[in-house]
Each structure stands twice: as C-alpha cells, then as structure tokens.
Length: 147
Image (cartoon, rainbow, N blue to C red; front, side):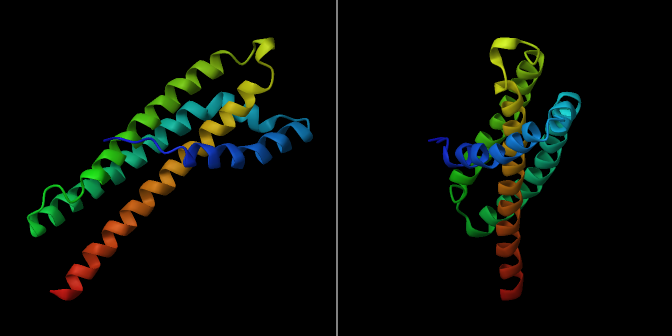
C-alpha cells in the first residue's frame, strides 16, 4: 500500500521558515522575486534529475531482484518512488497556481512562504532519491566484493 509520509513536508516547512523570515526581514524580497521567475524551471530540472536517478535505481533493483529470484523484494521501494514522482508533479502544478496568485492581496505572505516551501520540499525529495541511489550502490559494491 502506498503511504505518504508527513515527516518530510513537516521538516521542509520548518526549514522554509528561516528563509522566509530572512527574505522579509531584509525587506528586499530577493528570494521571492527570484522564485517568481525561476521556481517552475528549478522544479522541472529537479524532476528531470530525479527521473534519471530513478532510472538508474530501477535498473539496479531489477538486477538485484533477478539475482535473488525475489521480485517482491523492492516492492516498498518502487511504491515510494511512485509517491515521490507524484509529489514532484504536484509541487510543479501547485507552484504554477501559487505564482499565478502572487498579486492577490488577501493571501498576503502565504504565497511567498509556499514558494520557498515548494523549493525546499523538492530539494528534500532530491536528497531522498540520492540516498536511495547510494544505498543501492552499496548493495551492488558489496555483491561485487563477494564475487
């Protein structure tokens, strides 16, 4: 069963707060202006990097599963990869919506905070995928040493 873990969004929210406060404290709103212009491009780039890395992970998973003759060994990993990809697309679409609402007064600073949150959350997803790749590579390296 696919399960969404709330820990990562919570950590991303907490990490986003100091960036948001600093951007507002210095009064320049440089980060907000930068994200208005570049957030969607950054998120799509991170999705592309993650997709390429996921391709490498899946090829290694298939190789390991064939060696162990157990096709279900990485069932949870594949499920989490699927969730990760959905999260990234959701972040892109949510960013488009939030950026289009940036000038609406009643939303105030919420849109500015959300843009920072989307960036931080995408970076956290990148970190998780990189950790997954390194874990798979450790298994591969360990297997090669045994052979």
